[in-house]
Image (tube, rainbow, N blue to C red; front, side, top):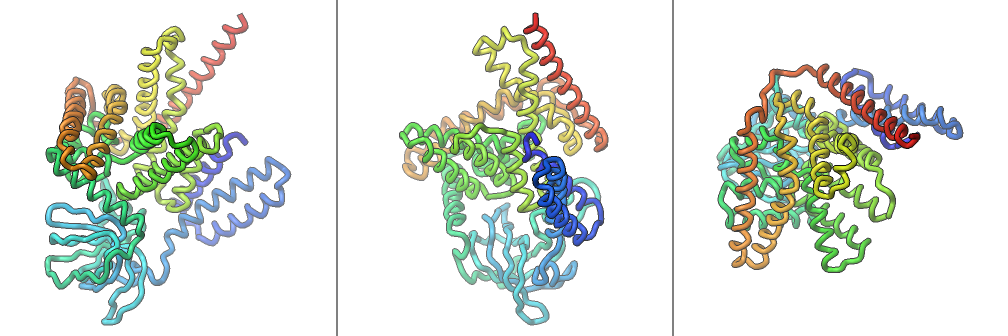
Length: 506
């Protein structure tokens, strides 16, 4: 079986999809998984039968894990509270870095005790807490909270907030008004010490950026290197969306790739041996993912980066399809609902599109041009940008109702330029923490780089035909588009192979 991890991941995906859309009992999937595994062991020496039964076992496992994630333990807070309750008392520990917006703050609370009918009882599960007053909270704080507990709203059109939170295992929201007696700190620093350290570093870096840059540039740089997007204006977001470069303000594989490159280069300059260099880079990427909030897209990108670095560490040839498949399996095994997240679909599809399509697009150019170094470089970045655009075009049209042809040119310029911004941003943050009097000197260049970035985006979307707003797109058109894409480029590959064989025979 070629690329076995790809087949395993595809079977796992299919199992998750079937469990999500068909109401088949959980025990049926468990039984099917067990029987498939037994038969795969029985036919272990017969390759074809073993492969079929083992893929069935993986399919059943995907379905079982999704259904299992829907079964909440009896102590779960969502089982102890009705759809909407009166005021409740809750004790728990803050499980993320709190987010501040104006005078309000929100955070995820890992519930420990709940007061029901004047009796305290142990509970579990996560709750999204919204405090409507300006308090200072930190990761690892144990709090007593009193407020109204309710289920998230489910909207009939567009973004479904309830499903979005459910995919993060959050089923309830606790709303706390301004009364000071409703919030009491019981303990501090009871969380993971590594996460606590990473969040402290995050706050120090943010303080340096905010103190030394204008509010506009600080908002963009905080989004690019720390993943904090709440201070970006609607106009800034629109410019990035229309140019197709909004991915630069969400920590993704691009950011992790740039950060890994900077780390490897720095460690090489200070003459760290090869294998320790890769180990240190993997550890630093894990710390960086925590520092940026350790949300799902960041963890996903970190796993993908570590898989590739590990391949280099053990000196094995990198099979990008197997590496991506393994990363997807790890992510979905932990949380199968990630398959339905837009960010998951876009990030994996963009990488697969680049790996599969860019060599085919590059092969369409005359060989004479590929022999000229500068033109070869331009062809390479065009092929990558065009491949990503083709791969995501239909899905972006379906979800966001926008078509941006200018994305191809924008990413050819912005993606390489991002290396400069990320590097200058980290240098500013580090200098600001170690030698604060020197920070304004580095801040000036950082400010200039960010203004140029935004000017480039603004100029590009001003070009006629840069982007088009679309009506709603049927999902059947999305499937048809990808079917045609596969047929066309498979045909291109076969044509190039046939042409090459014919030339050699002559």
